[in-house]
Length: 179
Image (tube, rainbow, N blue to C red; front, side):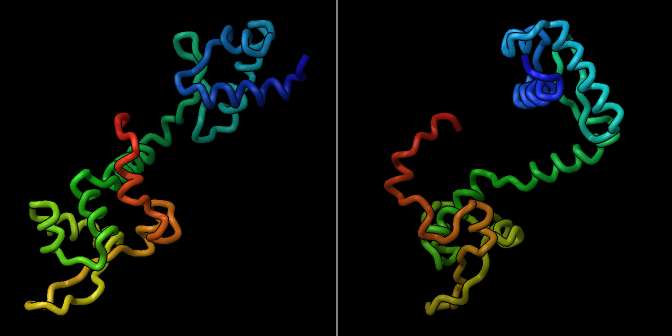
């Protein structure tokens, strides 16, 4: 028999990781406790969160207990999600970034030749996000700008150095069927 504080911690963790929420019965079966006892602990937990008046609440809906955000934080969450969505890279921009990462230093014209399409707007977007930067000029007619990746690029992808990028062979062996 677990003490109530331990049960509260376990139940809180289970509800947190469940995603869709859990019924008292599901929790009771998992912990080999009575459903009434689990319901009492869930209600106590819900009261604790309500009294705390924080950004997270434990609520029961359709028989399942789940964590939800409080309504007072909704405008901030909405703004955050919109920004995160804006922060994601499009497939085209990611393709251009990959070319720069593996072929740097490289000119915009060379990127266009590899892709078979104009890449100027993607390069500009990558510069604006500080993932790519001008690295000088190529010794060629017109002295075109050379581009390369930045320290922020390494941080964005969670690597320490360019050598940590997967090799082209490793990329070919990767399974992208879930994407």
